[in-house]
Image (cartoon, rainbow, N blue to C red; front, side, top):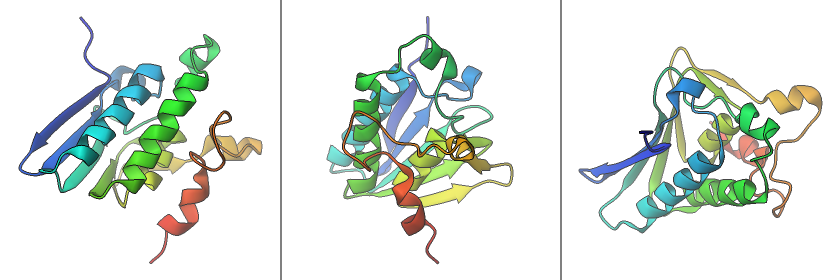
Length: 159
């Protein structure tokens, strides 16, 4: 029996969204991305929720795209649509969203953090965008620019 790729619970007005694929450092695949979008929408719609905390199970927040799923061809348009839905909902919800970055918070992991209102990085957090070292701008190719790209970064680092 496999566990859900995202755990969601609400307690005392706080929605806890936990990426739950620790064996692969919470790498993004279609089931995780769709479940993240669904959890963000559930938190946004719940009138009892005032704070949404996004975190990762295990030793990393999110290591980015699941390269095994990518190589297998299971990362397609549906993935990107769910990805945009998740990031946009985290960014636009009428609740405060906090992302707890620990361990690897790379690529899509960092993009999740950028979509949240607040980011808390632990001492062991490793932040990065690997695509940028290859001259690639991370985005969702099937969807409207810049819905899931790193355009959120400049506004996120204000003091």
